[in-house]
Length: 210
Image (cartoon, rainbow, N blue to C red; front, side, top):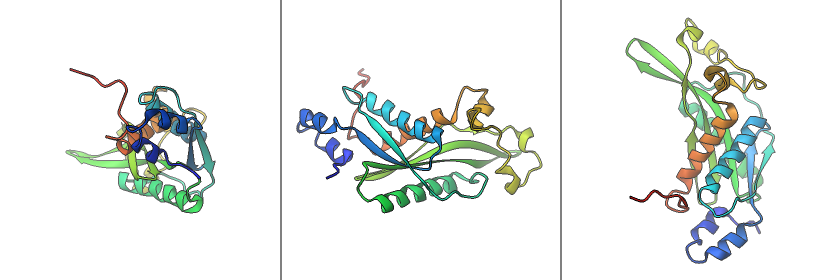
């Protein structure tokens, strides 16, 4: 029988030794799609989060599952991007039942913000994680698209105007000169989602004390 990590965490305060022993076999995460940067980023996010909260590194396996590709281009709002990721994570859980501890999907998208003088567009990654005891959403850092890059483009063209290639580290790598990559962005979004999912349940081992 698959034992939920969320359930194990809830009993940690009763018997930490039993909790750690049950967790030795590791965590399995079902991920939407085969994109290497997303898979590695999801794993990095889980490992980074648990490293700060458990006495030893827990093995994390992220298993890709094929999904139907959407049309070319990026969603044009945070709401649409989150909705797409959530739809895919829910589809995985519906298809796979309780075979995995977590079901996760990551998507990148654009979001427009109205400011004085016009509209600014930002690109970021969003990760949706479903667990036995709930779900949570996290995002990466947002980077603004240079106005000169998208000047004169309509919404249909805008979704295809983001620079970067997978081999070159993706669009965030292109925009930041290699400082940020798709993998690191997915890891940050995943870490942030886990922070929300486990808030008040699994506390950091490095709490700052006054």
